[in-house]
Length: 134
Image (cartoon, rainbow, N blue to C red; front, side, top):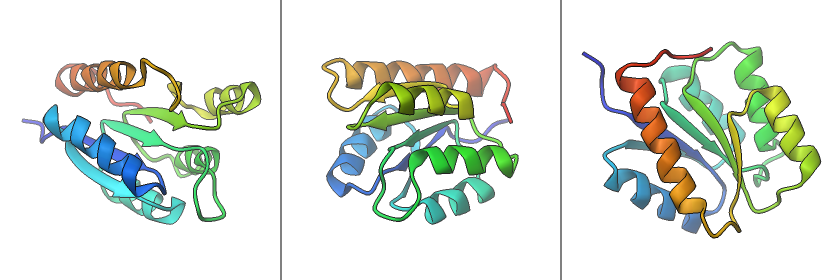
């Protein structure tokens, strides 16, 4: 029997993390949060997450793209990796997908919360019957 679904929210903005925490907790997800790349990688190294939401720009010297790259380099297992950023540009999006992101969403999108709920449902499906990726 599998444990509860878990989402990791990687963002240095406390207000944004609180918003996402509420959305995913209401859907029954366990929540973990990280403000820095170091904390994010520590969390991913010690626990499987069905969904990883990562901001592009963080307060420390690493970016969300650096986190995705390290996840792949260290061969860490996760569910879907979704970049959620207020600084979307085409080059960053292309790089994120090349590094292994599953989706790239803009915080300014009017449909962002709906898209995140869809990602959560997809994570639930993968958790209950799908496969985990490396």
